[in-house]
Length: 208
Image (tube, rainbow, N blue to C red; front, side, top):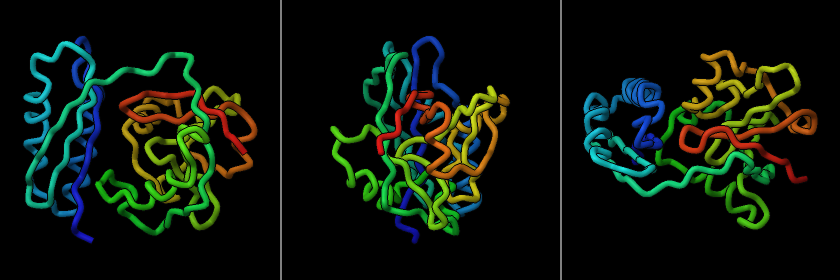
């Protein structure tokens, strides 16, 4: 498939600037190189232009097309409260661990939209997908983390078929998380979190 674009979704904070910008640009550049997309070098400047003078938190979305076209849109963003807990459910839709494109953030979203559509907003705030082997992979818009009491969060390995999330990368590099295979039964033991670079780490409750 070639009819897709690469995507990065960032948070802009008036005090901190574009949050995790370096990690977002690194992922975009890496994905563009692997897929033969042009134009990644211009992404940083375009992002800075889009938020220049902004005085409130923003959701910033950048797309990079195969021909090098960069588009940036912004929208007001309200951070989640510290006491927020999301209800999560496990989808019957499965990811293919052999699909290497799942490791990159793209506009190819059909499988995630299908999984999200299995439950109404009243039934779940987020939906977790497994791969064909039954391993935990990721949420439709988040990475998955489990606190089993070891003081280091566990998060599924990329080889299971999931996105190299920016928040996930930051937590692993900071030794606050480590890669570990997770099964649905593991989520019943310990504290579950989901998260992404836009929203941060969110406490989650598995609904079965």
